[in-house]
Length: 132
Image 1 (tube, one colour):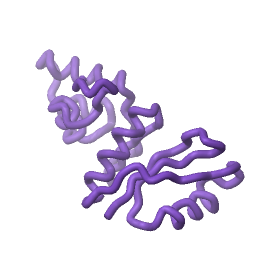
Image 2 (tube, helix red, strand yellow):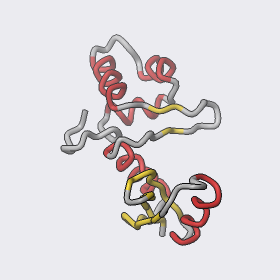
Image 3 (cartoon, one colour):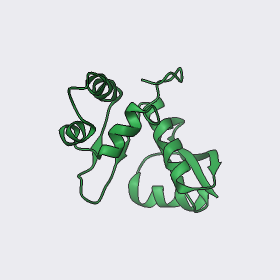
Image 4 (cartoon, rainbow, N blue to C red):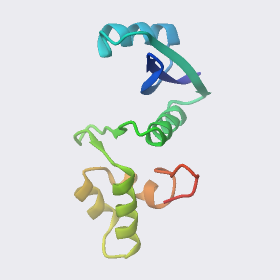
């Protein structure tokens, strides 16, 4: 079971993540490595998923919903983040039929699969659950 969690410092949301490990282990890891010196770190279980793919999708959705940077990493690409504005812009460009998915992927430094998932409404949902 893969757990999606949020991490808070003094009650303020600082990160959302997922893990196969226990939340106590993840909290200790955050204290030691990533958020050294942040006071009163707490971790809260948000949901459980059967696959890493589902947990990653939920993590991304929650990060976008809460305004936390979310990135896609591929071995051949540098780390890249799409904002909701960029997602809307990509979809608008794609709909005009003046750009292919591959052209947009190259322009925004993501994979073509990211573009196709976006235009098919599988990723980058707005808060009211309408697809952009």
